[in-house]
Amino acid sequence: MDYYDSEDNENLEIELLLEAINAKYGYDFKSYARASIKRRIRHRMSIAGIKKITEIIERVIYDRAFFIELLGDFSISTTEMFRDPDFFQAMRKDVFPALQCLPFIKVWVAGCSTGEEVYSIGIMLKEENLYDKAMIYATDYSDKSLSAAKEGVFSIKSVKKYAANYTDAGGIQSFSNYFTAKADSAVIDPSLRQNMVFSIHNLASDGVFGEMNIILCRNVLIYFNRGLQNKVFGLFTESLEDGGYLCLGSKETIRLSNFSDNYDEVLKDEKIYRRNIRPVSYSQKINGNTAVTPEFVTKGGELIRDMKSKIDELDCLIRGESGKDSV
Amino acid sequence: MRRYEAVVIGASAGGLDALKALFTGLPDDFPLPIAAVLHLHRNTKDELITLMQRDIRLTVKYAQDKEKIKKGVLYIAPPDYHLLVEDDKTFSLSVDEHVNYSRPSIDVLFESAADAFRGHIIGIILTGANKDGSMGLKRIKARGGTAIVENPRSAQFPDMPLAAISETEVDYILDVNEITCKIDELVGAL
Ligand SMILES: C[S@@+](CC[C@H](N)C(=O)[O-])C[C@H]1O[C@@H](n2cnc3c(N)ncnc32)[C@H](O)[C@@H]1O
Image 1 (cartoon, each protein chain N blue to C red):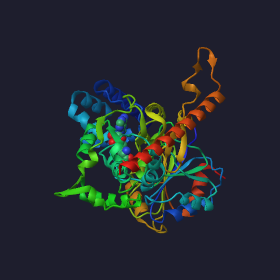
Image 2: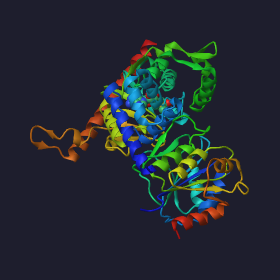
Image 3: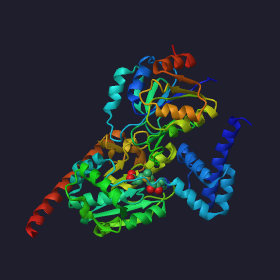
Image 4: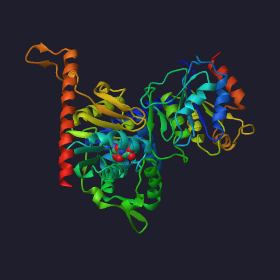
């Protein structure tokens, strides 16, 4: 048997393994980027002393504990507080000011891993006096990561590294104020957790999270193939309010997807996009048979947007006034 | 079928100069795609590409996630991401843990490329002060590809070439300018 055969066999075996995992445990990895999955499988094989993927299939089916281990291998949890400081700085400068006048801010951090990103957003919302009217939904499909996220306990060493990120992101407080030391770890200020909800959510199989003003999904989509990326972008597009923000990882883009037209660029390099008014494809017809022309939709969209911003302005004015009165 | 479908390159300390030297001699219609991992600092700015482009006739760009791999382009792995090749000849990026203390890691690119191109590739290890790439080059050889290593005696940092040579029976050990000629000869670029 030359290596061509063995390679075809390997691909076939991987296909069967992923099928088995899906059928038995309901985790769908079939649409994940295959090259990385292959690395994880090989890694597990060398640790467990397994020679053939077929043997893994058997273990996965009969040995739940082994599956949990493999699931851990598949769930790359790499994260940092204020990873890509420029991104967080941009959120502070270019996105948060636009939220000042909203009565309520809903944020979804999808694929939140062990929580570092969620607390980073929490800290910034607090510093910009937006936290009290914010609700942050933090989701991941890995319950192991999610429990760690809820705990909010980090090593002193990593917090030191995060402190530099925080400063680069325009942070002006003393970063250590957000933690209390406990043995050799740092526990996050629990008041940051007040308006946070942590829950299991699988982007590959679960549904919409409604009416979000901001969705952060960074360094998750690179693990998916184009098909699954598209599906998830559809999910986000449904979940976002008009004018809501979608924030991706520094090497991710909406531009290669079917939903590109639904987003305007806020900051290209920081991968911050803004959901625009729904285009034609969503509402084909109005009043029975009258087909809606693209011009009609554009014009209508503009009018609605205009009105919305006028209402927001008014709202803001009124609030501003009454705000002053009550001081 | 073509003997070769792609060239992959790994370079670490001293790698930028070596890459420039290697590519100055290659034409802009080079008939294969080229993907390179350079051990860059994670904060390396995009200007690096502009700088490289000044000395290199091929189009130079950071590889993008899910991008279709095209011939005549020199793709560089973006800093702080691993670069992988998928079976459908597109790139994937990942933030998997560091391999050989590196992200991007040469091993990760080489191993995935060896699989995706089924051995129809040339792997090249240039100057560097660590061991990254030696396992990847081994995989390329095992799959029937061709392994070239920069001569440790003339390389700015010999460790990476030495590690590759001790791990694998490589096909050629050459000075950088000789590597350019060897690529020409193997691929028939000129
Ligand atoms: C590399 S981490 C990124 C963490 C964080 N967003 C950041 O950028 O720092 C990727 C996360 O995506 C999660 N993930 C992977 N597939 C997922 C899915 N189908 N649904 C939800 N989360 C997923 C993993 O469990 C992991 O926590």
